[in-house]
Amino acid sequence: MDRLRKLASAATVVAALAAPTAAHAAWTPPATLGSSTGANPTAQGAFDGSVETGFLDPTVSLAKRSGDGFTAPTPITAADPFEKVWAAQLDAKGDAVVLTVRRHKPFQRVRATFVAADGTRSATRTISTTPRSSAGPQLSVAPDGTAVAAWSWHDVAGWRAQASIRRPGQAAFDPPQTLSPPAPVTGKAQSRPILNVAAGDGGRAVLTWQFGGNADIPESPLHVLTAGTDSKFGADQTLDGAGGYADVGLAVGAGGAVQVAYLDEHFVGHETGSSLRVAQGTVGAPLSAPAVLSSGGKGTSSGNQVAAAFSADGTATVAWAKPGNRYEEGGALEVFTRAADGAFGAAQTLAQNAEGLSLAGGPAGAAALTWMVETQQPKSVSYAVHAATRPQAGGPFGADETISDTSRNGLWPSVAMTPAGDAIAAWVSNTDGSGGGSNTAAISHVG
Image (cartoon, rainbow, N blue to C red; front, top):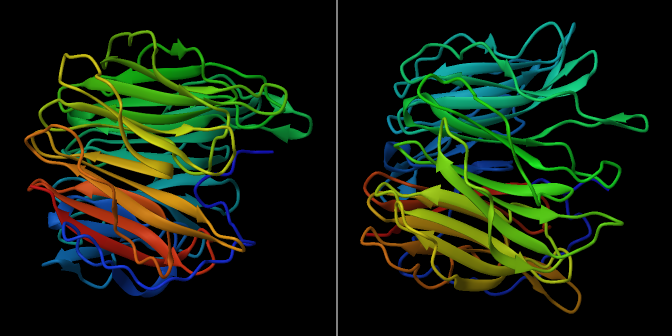
């Protein structure tokens, strides 16, 4: 079956309720962001910390930091009856890029809106190729406003990977580039390329694509392309050992350094252990051959199991939830760090049963990492959000801290860091273990 991702529902899960647990002193108590429910809240570093909400809703809303709390979420885009929000991110100034999918005859389109920090909105414009349909957009926005968007575009031969870059200061995305051949057809189903993107300052970007995601498609390599300051994707490079589905973490540093980290997942007939592989280099040049940093079992889990980030001083960090041999039980959380131009050191193990990773770099050598942990009870399952931070002075990450209210489930965390070095974490809280619920956030003064 297809790989279940971030919004996979666990309708049969019943939450195990316990007495509330206070947050560690380094984190503020969890704050509920307004009365509405949603999914996939995204932590942002802008406005000294903020949280974006609205995935698959008609509009994007933003809750800005206020002291050690947040304002109520306020819509920053206008609703359209034919469009749903798929992605939104802010740059360092608070200017937002919003991607929507418009489902209306004669074809489905990916569209973009720019919202300035003062609330001024641009017109919403189609960025995908017409006149055929596009779907599944991905977005990344760099601190200087560089944005990279990618999506699946359907031509006569099948679904292909397309991408476009908005250079800093520009009022529109560049014309899209088609980056892959048509995806294979499996039976009556037309598969789509699996896409990941990361933006870097100065118009830089990195993108990966792969044909995979289910047992009917042969295992295939991961493809990576980078764009330099000309914002044009260059040659396609293949990275081996990607299995039937590569769980990918991408990062682009301020000067163009690139990290591509991935875990190989395998499907029926190909079951085997997994490894954490990392390729690195700079945009505009071939990356290194992938090196194996760690190996684990076959028991992969839903949500992101790999994450990568650069801190402002060039420190590169890669984390993965090292699988055991049982599925959907998370893994041992291992973190690898290297200085700019250095080599990765030994793993720092932070936790067990981790899944749903999110990692952000901050000023100097700071970084913040969040994940969720599933706890099995005799008749139920509960989830909690955990975090660890690294100070600006560098060194190892601090201790594992539970930052969500343990009387409720905490799921699918996102983390960002502010220019001052505070960490902002956002997640979904609920009592049924599903993908949606109350948007929740907390703040840590990392230092």
